[in-house]
Length: 121
Image (tube, rainbow, N blue to C red; front, side):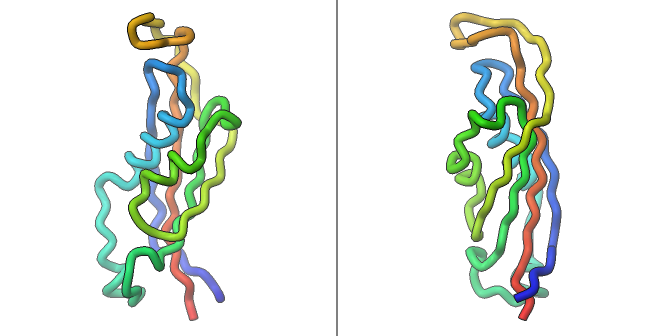
C-alpha cells in the first residue's frame, strides 16, 4: 500500500535541569502536536478511528543513545507510531542546582518532526 502524508508538525523541547534527553525529546514532540486538530483524518482521509493513522516521529537531541523511546512515543495519544532518534539539537550552558538533581550545567534542547500519514488504497 502507498502512504500519503497529511501533515508534518515541528516542535522544540528543553530540559533545563536534570540533563535527561528523554525529557527534552518528549517535550519537543508534545510541542509539535500541542496546537493541532486533525479533522481531515476523518473528513478527507476517511479513517474510522485515530489509531489507523501512521505517525512517524523524528527527534534530534544530544545523547540520543540515552532516549527511552517508549516514553517519547507515549506523548502521542493515537496512531501506529515509530520513532527515529538522531544526534542533534543543542547543549547550552545553564546553571547546576543541586536541589533539582542536576548532574552538570547543561541544558538540553531537542527538535522534533511528527509526520501523520495514511495508507492509500
